[in-house]
Length: 546
Image (cartoon, rainbow, N blue to C red; front, side, top):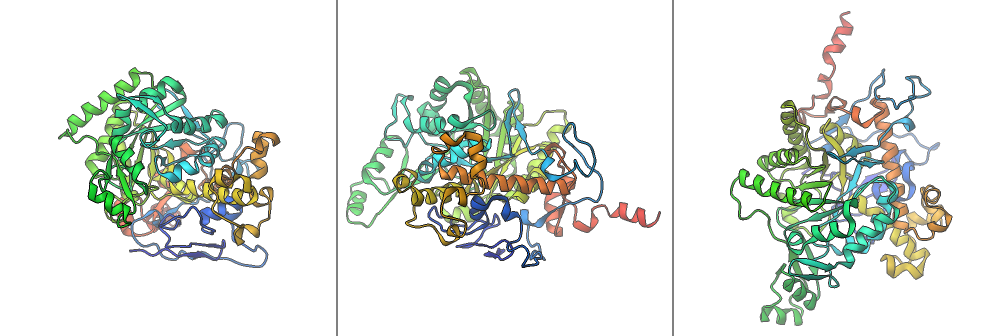
């Protein structure tokens, strides 16, 4: 197992726990006081792109080895000359070819185009309590930045206030809150995506959403995720709530109806219950039958009015990957998110998350191969989003390049949630009257926050950018977590622009697999990306022999 460094002295970041490939701790806490790269970027923004203490230090790369098959073992090409994809009106001069002029807007869709200001989207934030607690920050932040946010599975099913009769939702206040919070600040960029699993389908989520919100919402069918190969889970520590979920039709473990379980809970031997969702397609036995069922679902969604439909699939094997790409292409879906093992935001069984499924870089490499097969037949391949443990601007570039020209978005789960936590904790201290509302966890500002200031406009590098967008009056209503999300997004955007400028690519559509090279031979073999010293070697020798 590769061990990633817990500290980066150059940019002044430290991981509280064990870091993963993404640079995030394997266990990311909402009450964390810092200071991993994503956490600190939510405050300082693009300043974290550079080594600290400028003028007092020199800094050199610590990445002298690249071990294993993972995204960190891909390196990004830089070129000496030329330029490609300059925005209209610019010329290939040194004054125009600067990184702020790199266009990082993206779009996806079959017949209806969804535009995004940055090629990132959130992971599915569903029935986990942490998603509900910090939703205002997540949704307002996504809308302000102009990126898609996904309402994950089971939001209606676990809502005590929701009213469901015979598969028809009559009332869904939590789902309404999720959608309305995003739409309040939506300005034409980004999207609100509502995901459905087996229980959501039974509960009539699709019908409720289309009747109330029409084409303002993208509906997403869910096959799975990269964190686990069973349905979604949450944990509850209340017997009455466990019984409520059981009566709603969920699997609850241990079964709260059993008298012995109730007695064990009463005496403290059992302290919590896990609520599980169901597996889909259990009544089907061949790819052909899956396709038939899938197409029937898509056709039904179109019939009731949905103009934009997406699919989320997990890190199953190659057959399921091929099915997702082929079926989504045939159905002319708007987006297919492919989530590799290594990610996760919810309550996935730990050893399952550690041991099952296809790691992201392998799954994404095969996705490109399979998409290429369909493209060679003249098909317009469904737009792809790659997910699974991606958090930094270099991850964004690498994922887009690895899947080029099919990838349009990079899906970030935990990384997109961290600014919501950080901002809410700061708001709870600076505005004590809001502490309960925003779920702040701190009694005092963390030392690394105090270094920056004692007010929001001092702490958040993106504060005045957000204020310029919404106005001074509305700024009073913006959650600090949303300001933190804007600040992190600004760092990711600037970092991506810099990497693209170095690769002489001034438009996302011009990024290609040739902009990467493999740092070891195993990565070359598994991804099809050429090894460092093999790239342009023939051209180099031609120059030498000229």
